[in-house]
Image (cartoon, rainbow, N blue to C red; front, side, top):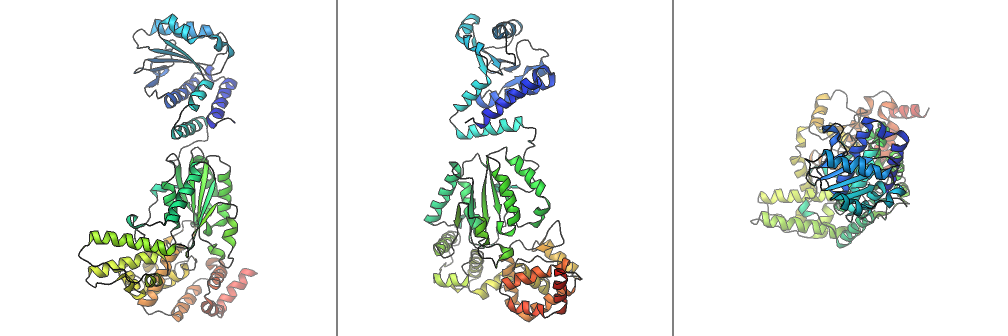
Length: 550
């Protein structure tokens, strides 16, 4: 089976022959430049230059390395080979380039020819008193195959493919796919790097998954788990164990704007296909339809592999318990089980934090207390755990001398309320929005609240989609935490929420504006029966839903 570089180079040679490239001055220069870069890549001749730019009609020489004294003639002829080698190359170089250092002369024939087999490099070298070499494209391919470093081999393959394809435009214009190491993640309430903990099972699994990619034993892999279970951190650890030549890019499928830029996404994947790439598709559960299209596109490229991150359930159809599992049924996958080794993970994170706290703040007592109580207080949720730890740190710095197990929901909500300065925002507006998005419902602006709304947007608490009038929170669990915090700190109740929801719905006239049917379905699927019942008792809600059906 031919290698990628062999296929690409031989196809290029056919193009040179078929299109008479060496009979066209500008195209000949382009071809010479390509082979110059190829020699540099394979043989390390970094000082090669194309003399045809600086010395018009340089006799016998196309490419020259002044440091090594290497002169190269590039030719496409397929007859009179000995004459080309001696009369047109060696003798012209000796006659017209006496001032140049010439240690080696290479006659590079783009096409292989049997006649070349009868010409002795040793005899030519003895005759002209310097090293004479004859090379062909196939010999270059053979020298490439001798390269031991897999990183160097793959990089050369990529560059050759990029150089020879008119479709390659580079990665600088990618808009949707982001380099994985450039992803900006808020560090607030995220487990610090020095506190990240992986169980022995997880460490083994990380290396196992990375090895599957490194040894080319899998094309794709899925990481499944509940919200805030550590899926992204786990994926990051896999990426760190990949062979460095992979270019790793990530795309967050939770952004509905992507539905309006499918063509651009496919074009960006085309560009990534010129590299040995890993594409990470995050939040697959938010857009399974788009995921299937992207996965099919990825499958068509040999050099692209995929890592897919998803919650267990399709968040838009949470009543369908097995939907997301069906999506990944034929893909290697790792399922984060919150009941399997999760306690060990939480314990490890706490131990790491305590270790660093004792070093950084030795004058304070850092006692954990009862571990089961900590798990209960934080609802076995890593986001809430990190907020509990920050609450604990803040309290102890103020001299309260608490154990971590004493940080209960009241403490967590109070700290989160103050730290996020939630009192500065319109409470009812934030209470409504955080409730909606905690159930995967994007929302519109409440009419007449432009100033309050703008403040939420300015502080980054809510974000708008560029292709619609809807808004969302950076994370579903972040919205849920805000909602629970406001419920406790502002003594808000279900009846307050029902009133806000009805007023919100009354602000819009059509079902298409609100997508009221989706709101009701999602709330029902989430077990919000009291809220759903209250909404269905509203004549306008029923009217809008009936209108959407008809």
